[in-house]
Image 1: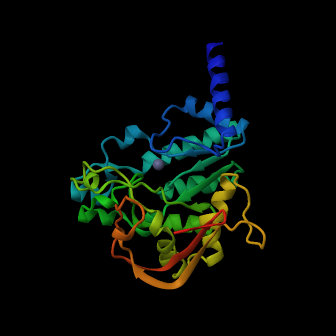
Image 2: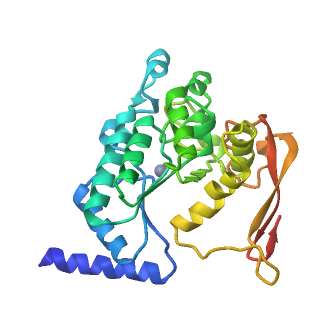
Length: 298
Ligand SMILES: [Zn+2]
């Protein structure tokens, strides 16, 4: 009875959130370790027809890990985060999504194993969607060899095989979206030893040119696919109203100049978070105009 009452209270709290405009429930940054709690959250989300966005990480397996567990972590003498820490959580979340019928959205997929699990789940008709970050598509754990704390992210940068699997997943529709997992940090927070630094990359302002340079210029994704993965699909996943470009409607669009080629300059970021490992990278395909709800953003 007590459980039921509590459940009812939680459901009405979530109802209030949805009424106030919440479009999803998420545990990002603090993985739900208890399967029973996740089941309840998914049941509520299902009730209100919104997705559960899951940060898939078995915190016990992560332990004190600071980078991908593999050859590089051994060579560098750093504690590793095994791929299995992500894979077991993705598997569990998919099973609970199947049980509840909820829409599960998996944030920042980083392993080949997770891509396979999501591919199989989709084939079985389970309502699961997934995203990948630009940094997981453009970097491997080799980048950690420089001990640049700006490549310390969660989930960690993985191996070439994982990156190839992520790209394959993007191409065949297993991975629906590219999203930044934007995590700005102050300079002084990152200017510490690798072990001490916080996880995260300030990724918002490099997302489009990174994807353009690495995926569009190399013919892995077409321009329309880029728009689908970075704009249309994310809006669909969150159940946002469809945007159309039409006379008389408020514009919501980004204009990209494919010929604009210039280096990333973190000092020019609008974000106060300058923690980017891409400083100095020369990229093509910069956004040159963004209009949100009819207002031009500077
Ligand atoms: Zn996360």
